[in-house]
Amino acid sequence: MTRKLVLFDIDGTILLTAGAGRRALVAALAGEVDDASAFEAVTGEMFKRSPLLIVQEFTPTEFDWRITVLDGKVLFACRYFMAGRHWQIQQSYQSGYTRYGKVDAVPRDEAPREVVTLALEAAALIGDGLYGVDIKETPAGPVVIEVNDNPSIETGYEDQADKDRIYEDLVDAFLRRMSDGTRVEAR
Image 1 (cartoon, rainbow, N blue to C red):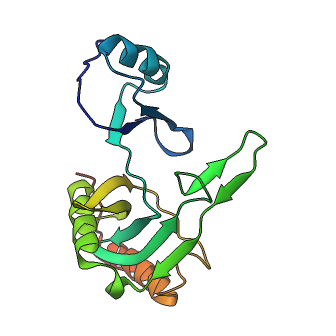
Image 2 (cartoon, rainbow, N blue to C red; image 1 turned 30 degrees about the vertical axis):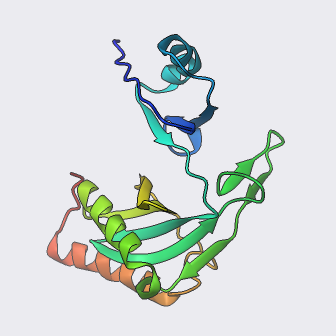
C-alpha cells in the first residue's frame, strides 16, 4: 500500500487518530515531529491499525459540545467536561478503571446558535440519521472535532434537560420511517 505524506505547519500540539471508536489510537505530538522521517517513525505503528490517520490541531477547552442530530434536527445538546486534569472527556487507566468528566445537558433551544448551525451542517454532510457532533468553541469560532454515527443517549445524563422529549422524538422518527418505508442512506 502506498502512503501519501502531507507535511503541514501547525504551531503547537497536534493529535493523530488511527481507527475509530473504542479501538482508536490517539497520539498527542508536541514539537517532537519536525521533519518527514520523524513523522514516519511516530506514525508507523498507527498505520498498522488503520490506513487512514486523522490529524487535528490540539485545542484544549474546558468542555466539548455534543449536539445530537436526528433527521436534520437537534435531538439534544450537552456539554461534556474533561475528566479532571485530563485533556479528554474520559481517562482510561491500565487497571481498567475509567474516569469521566461531568455531563451537562442544555435545553436544545438554549444551545449556542453558531454551535447548533455547525452541527446541523456537519451531520447533513453524512446523512439523515442519528449523529452526535462534537464541537469545541474556540476564539476563531466553533470547530467540529468529530461526528459519531452511534452517539450515547444515557438516562440521567444526555436526557437531563429535554427529558422524555428526546425519547418521544426517537420513537416518532422510527414510527415515521416504518410507516412510510423510509430508509436512511448515508451520503
